[in-house]
Image 1: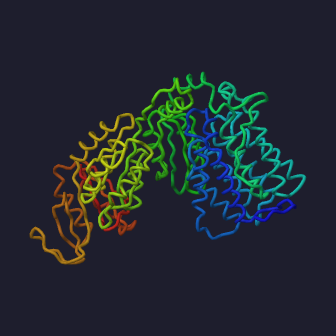
Image 2: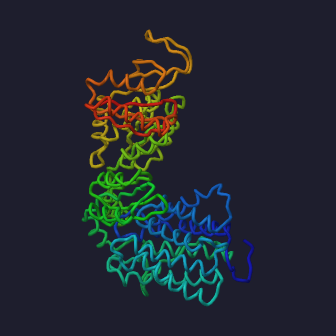
Image 3: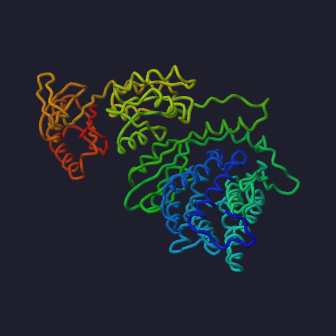
Length: 554
């Protein structure tokens, strides 16, 4: 923007996006310092990285967004921030974007008054989503910035002036956090999330003032006569490693009606440090668990799960401690965390695989008619967030490509030769994050040997196979690649196929394709329940192309 001697009074939608972009770039420049400050609670991800990824998710979702309305753009930002929030700090940062959205509802510009109001809303909401708010954290920085913002906006309406006063207040507030929170004083650091927010405000202000560079390195505001050494106090580091932290479990719940208070109470009963917030029909949950599966199972009772992330905090603590020790004291830490790369097509199947895989699954688009290449699989493995990767090809034609990957990467890769996405989902159910990669691969291989796979689809041409005369447009069903039944009605063909396996089947899961509508899904569920009362049958939305139904028989 052109430099002016007059303070900027307000911002339209385009300038609001630019300010958030500048804040993201400021986070990028200071990310390592923010990460190094992170000690409370140890080791809830790296605060700087989590805040940066949360803001980047906001900016990514605005790509191609046509509106220039601050009200509409801020609403979009709030939704994106909540869904894209990473870790504790990301969810607290999402409250700032929610405050911005509420303060700008019905407004045409972002001026000083609206900005001050947004921080007040963010502060109020942040204290509400945390069960036991602690002073000396990001919450305190929000609250004290809100007070300064309100006083400033009473004096003038300029966005630049209010932002300048709030930015200065944020640094001052961060500098006083060790006096409010003993753990920070013990570690000889300031609150990392509060410092990250101050960094964002500084970047936005410098952009608004056309100061170069607007994303600059900011010194940590420690108390007088103190300097940040680049790491927490070593005694604090050693003590932190002795604690048990479990898993940091984060996921979104989608449903028409969600009672956030009920979800928060439930998570507090089964876990620690829960944060639950929502917008529209989406709730975002952050909780620490010894068994993340319990949190996911509880979440499924409220709606569909997405955006699942699970991190082993004990491993993170060991890595965090190792990085912060002096070189002569450090020990090599080998993470036992496992990532899973799986091939799938269909939104329902992708969500199911992420849920079944406890959130550690990366999905590669592929399947029949779009076989994933060696390059596709290698890219997914290399970008997976672990050096230990289980690869599920989930298609017999992709298995040979998958088997090339272990020799092409320095990562430890185990290929479980799943020939279908049905067997891939069954294999993921066997995943145990407390076991090593070989133990998991062995368990998965055992599972897939016990799963039969069926498919129901329409013929694209006339063909005669195994004495079955099939005409274009007819429906046929296969089981383990053998044609079992042919007909005109997909539901009847499905029923006949399951009937042929009913003697040995205990559990049957049917995944419905993208061509099967909601009414047909209800009809399918009713027919199968009535006909097979001795078999545990579940009908699940898969959304896969080409196949009306995919079937797993166990």
